[in-house]
Image 1 (cartoon, helix red, strand yellow):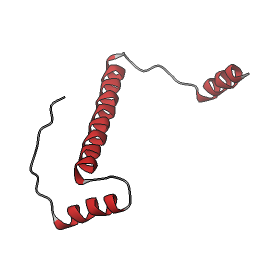
Image 2 (cartoon, rainbow, N blue to C red; image 1 turned 90 degrees about the horizontal axis):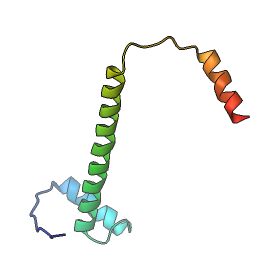
Image 3 (cartoon, helix red, strand yellow; image 1 turned 180 degrees about the horizontal axis):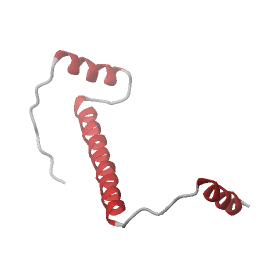
Amino acid sequence: MAIIRKTITLTDHQDNWIKTQIEGGNYTNDSECIRDLIRREQERDARRDAIRAALVEGEQSGEPRPFDPVAFKKRMLKRRG
């Protein structure tokens, strides 16, 4: 994997937050902190995309059927044994 060097601009507040994270032992340097933030955002995007896909699938699955919550609960309790 290639490593690309980037220059970024932060506000004082953002820089102080990163410094606090490093001083607290959460990260060893600025780059590690920022890479972790990017990874978490990528994971959040993937979860959001999965939810959207599930919603589309649900919308395309046809008309809703009646739902009986009492019968559903009984079935679930029966499965648990």
